Length: 298
Ligand code: FAD
Image (cartoon, rainbow, N blue to C red; front, side, top):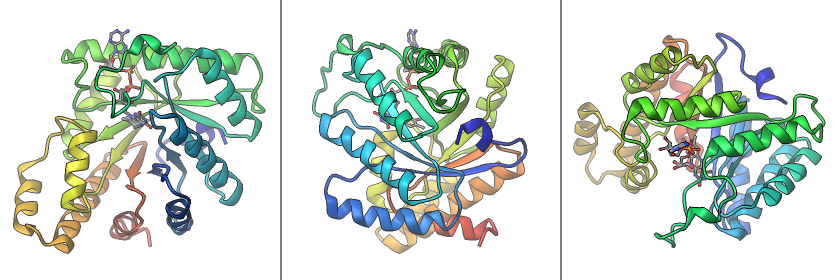
């Protein structure tokens, strides 16, 4: 299903993000989580894409399995890292052949074990170049939907560390939009003001695409560390930090704080007519289920 048929005005989407586990046992456990969360009828789920060869095939396999065994549309992430144009085309052909409707097109993080990764090996230096390639693929008519793949792109309400100049960064986001993106999905953030300001700046820059807000409930002290890695420089509001400090080493209390904060964020976003909420699940269902429940959604 094309994203333009999924996102409707004033009907916010709810979506979940998963990463492909490395072992087949973990894949089965994840699939149970996916099935549990499918009962919430998410608008779509997305599956991340790693920098290494073998994990990439796992993304494909998980996406196809979700497509074949649930009623939820899966959206694979795809990155520029270490890919030729031909490899990207082959990946698009494989997804098109099984009816995958959308792709989240990203520049991608370099391999974690290669701090000196040389981007000149990538056929596409920036996500905008990948978006252009997908649009050209769409124009070639190789997708069963005449519109081709719906294309999502990333954005960073608090700014991307690679571009300290926020005006310039907005130009780079606009370039992705102009190349053919259909929707924007944001990096996680903990203060809705950052998102609202970003959304206003997008509208001022002439970007009118739906903007889906990325929310990650904190579920453990370890999870906070992982978040700091994922969203370097994320602004943790003092109110949240105070509550986490009170929770200390009490795992259950940390999780309650995290879920409460995420639920408050989601309620605030919904009240402000957000286009959608994308929950970073870390492959677990509890936080997502509880956020849903606190929003009065079962
Ligand atoms: P770009 O849009 O290419 O931007 C990257 C940086 O380059 C920015 O600082 C931008 O301002 C700058 N830039 C862009 N164009 C130009 C230009 N022409 N000249 C100079 N500078 C330019 N990573 C993964 O590896 N796998 C995933 O599955 C994954 N999923 C993600 C999902 C979401 C929702 C988000 C928000 C991020 C995800 N990431 C993932 C991380 C992402 O790939 C990195 O944060 C990456 O550094 C930025 O990706 P981008 O697509 O925004 O890149």
